[in-house]
Length: 330
Image 1 (spheres, one colour):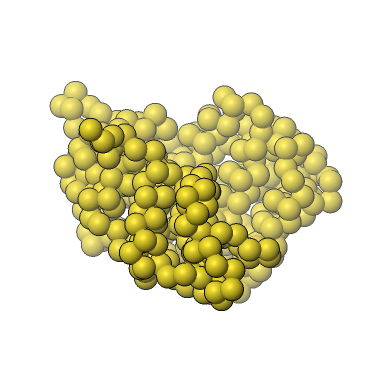
Image 2: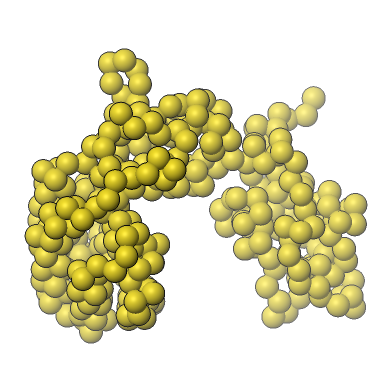
């Protein structure tokens, strides 16, 4: 009796699917399979993709060539390498796609759900319907329940005595408390994180924030959100203290809805200042001025806290069409 599909390792699922397409000719000789294309198509992490390609190589279905990223289908080294779109050559069966979603909910579905729920907290109180959540993401109700439990652990939702799940509202008083915690803790976390940051991490984020000077960039909600995570999560949350990281993440997460509102409703006068303060923190870090960076970070958070009431006053109502189908306003 074979191993049930739900018990197969992810790298086995990927390797077997690719192997069957190679044997059938859907992936012809010379076709180049790259790790990134595999992770994108199957929705898996890098390691399952790496192991899957190594399995194909061990089975002599593919080979590697110098200076070429990925593997080449077949063993002939005289056949020209043919880079192409892997997704256009492989159509995953619905059953397999569902299995992969079930298996990868932590890395694929949960981050999207976390952001979706966090982005609605400013706009009131919502009930989350578990069956609709399961249908929306194409997972079982058991996985949907696991997703909600994880949201509960970071403080975004709660299950009340009626066994129903609710999110919001995020009140001005609550936002003020969250900013107070961040002002107290983020500078300390930044000082601790400095020794764990590679120069390239700071350089990449400094380059991105330096380029965010156009009106178009300042109106891009996703870019502004990326700038927030660049500094406050990718840099600050590199601190060594695990409890400090967890506490700060819980304080930062509900404020995502504030960040996402930045670029959604036209140009705001506070956005250039916010971008400038992010840039100042990263410039100090790039120059090795740790205390100056920590001071600039505290100043940035204090300014954001002071500016928040005016920002909330300008926030328009959320249209029903903007809500995901598993969220019901109350």
